[in-house]
Length: 215
Ligand SMILES: CC(C)(COP(=O)(O)OP(=O)(O)OC[C@H]1O[C@@H](n2cnc3c(N)ncnc32)[C@H](O)[C@@H]1OP(=O)(O)O)[C@@H](O)C(=O)NCCC(=O)NCCS
Ligand SMILES: [Zn+2]
Image (cartoon, rainbow, N blue to C red):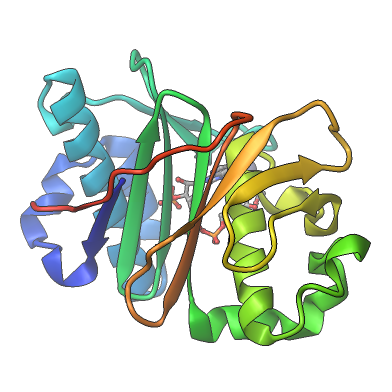
């Protein structure tokens, strides 16, 4: 897993992007969204290129959306024997790569706090007693979003149908609509002011190796 910061972005990084990615770059209205997207593509391309032994520009990333067919869905690296997941928030981007299917999520604490009003939509009934504070709720949010990114459903699925470990704890994730699905969520060490979680679609505990990305 690699962490990168917007401050590491250079104008030349945009040259690594594919034609489709450049089209998306131009579609962003907000400068920060654009920069986060470019940095995410850059880190993913460099990390995947390193693992495959090819130039970052030669990495083929498929992002076909299940809903509309456009290239803005769950990413996968064509020809790679591993799965990838990516998340960006505030000044930071995280890219995860694994032999098992994974989802990763990072959120700025300030943006997670906004979800307090959605408490009942986020929590499954059995979680409501454990999750008391906004801090707990933020932890549940990133764990659930990482789980739903691992399955590929994203926020199309209801967070209250996913049961995650108690706040701050790693453990089994249960999908109330898919009881046979096995998953394990990890609390990740995130940059100051952020929260992050990773879910792997595997029954057992998982280890994570964390690296700071270097351009
Ligand atoms: C996946 C999702 C939860 C990410 O939300 P977010 O908090 O805004 O963004 P994050 O920074 O954590 O993650 C964004 C990354 O998730 C990945 N992603 C996109 N769709 C995904 C999916 N269905 N499953 C897993 N990962 C997905 C992409 O790598 C994306 O990065 P990019 O925008 O640089 O390409 C959200 O986009 C979603 O729910 N998507 C599915 C529903 C939807 O909108 N469908 C489109 C209908 S046309
Ligand atoms: Zn779509």
